[in-house]
Figure 1 (cartoon, rainbow, N blue to C red):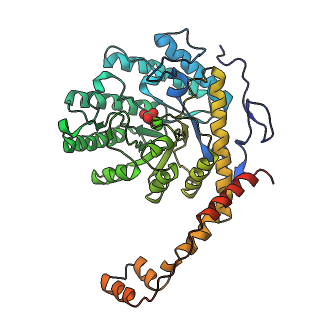
Figure 2: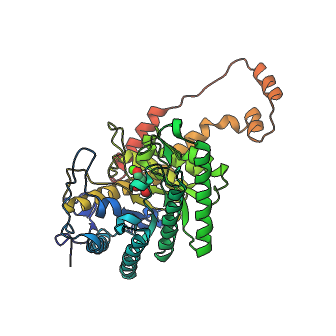
Figure 3: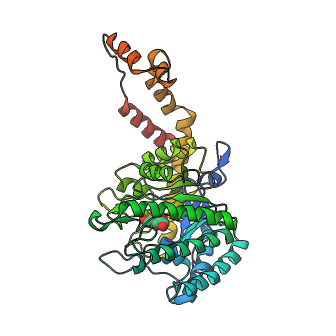
Length: 440
Ligand code: XLS
Ligand code: CA
Ligand code: CA
């Protein structure tokens, strides 16, 4: 049975191709440095947005037309798996990601939910045997069901803490069973609405305890995936505990979890936090905490998490700059946590959207590598900070200076000389690289 009959395997046809079902820039075998594009970019399809999502929004019902719409219950779950592996194959994508509830419906009891999961996980495992597509990460949805109304691991209700733990326990078992490279925690309900009814200290401590239990259980069952925290500042809760990388890192250090966790950084969450995507990537990178990426983009005019497919080449370039400087993503990847717009409701749009995202990051990779090879930023930044290479600057970075010595230095200054930051020149250079990379 084919779900996408009219669509053939998507091939690379080059920048001048007019075929909407072809890659213009993503050429999986093309070498960038010592890795192929495929090895560098490690693209993943988000199961929830591509196979489960119906494109409803807070004001309107779902619009998606999907070839598996005529199924329900477990038959629907099975049809989606079949469709998913056809989609992965046609797109040539090396990874996918899911939440427990994306792949199998919740039963009326936890036991029944777990049984549903067992059936579908066995089916997925079977498909994975004949497929090149592997599991980048899995996670559990501890936010949609009404039982999580007051949080999951940070709930005021100990029964919910236990229920959440049981779901993560199962998630880790599934991760092991399917060979997941990572396990993600996004704390959708791990935050609060108002301090007036919240014991913040207990909630934070419980969250810390919860993560330690997850680490211990993973060790016990021999699951060796990398643990990832996915920060998001708000939505659905007003205040989310893992606001951004900086606050998440402080939390991990305080609860002695920083050796066991890294970050899964989502572009749209970065902008919701009032940061750029590249800021979050840089903050994680310089602290050795960059694990994986949810590749999407927010809408600059909307204040919520729109999860659009990435198409902004400027941003993909600056993101890939951080990723290359990080030496790649290791076990992580670029997961398209992105949904087609509500008006793009046909199955074909799922292909167009992923092609757009993959091409955008391929361009970003190529341009960023060239910027690095030509040391465009490196030379400039080295020069800009050269005052720390000698004299008082060198004493400061070698920890040889104290306030008395610095005061003596300051008292002896007659004038302070500055150099230009040259931001306009740098931006014009990035534009030049973007526009000429395929002209050669
Ligand atoms: C929601 C999050 C979520 C995580 C996985 O905003 O992006 O989808 O990636 O739970
Ligand atoms: Ca995400
Ligand atoms: Ca999101």
